[in-house]
Length: 241
Image (cartoon, rainbow, N blue to C red; front, side):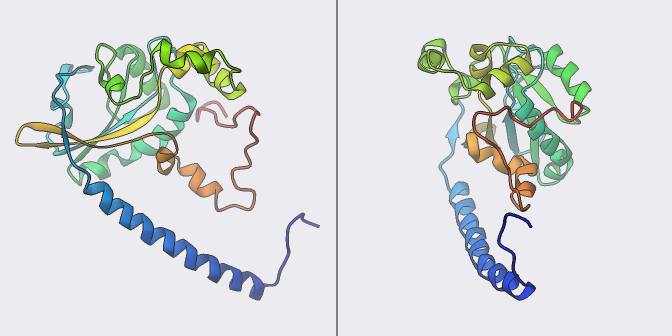
């Protein structure tokens, strides 16, 4: 017998109806937070960043590519990496197909990393992604919004016991734990108005979970995520399963 409570269809339906009330409350709360997100003050981006792209050097305003809105996924691919982060790769599997849909709503979606451009483009080709990817390696773009850490900032973490998953992910990208955790994932949003670029939103950590479609789906299965702290992470690049 399964090691789980078994019930009748009627019992299941009654419990499902109760859960649905809470799910609807969560949906409505999400709508409220979306409105608050859109009401955040805009901050003018005053620093002149210069990105390496397949079409030459471009400014942040150039990256909008004719759109009024820009979404940047800060992909963990630092200068010492020889492959992209596994988790960021899984996220990009979700992001890339959405590029044309967002473009239809006047929004450019793209990737930014600090590794050299040729390494980014080689990995993009391997993964088969149709999404623009530029290098911010010569700028403080990631650092200025908290997605690049210094050695001093990392010292307490690195002098402690490194979690096995960090060692696993570092090895999978061809670097060591220090090189790996120097980078952080994130999403930042911008709008272009009267020639001025404004930052409108930034998120990281579990705030990125909506981009990880597999978690949404696993959360609706009987076993859920079934991840055990301290064990190797189950994620792989889509061509490595």
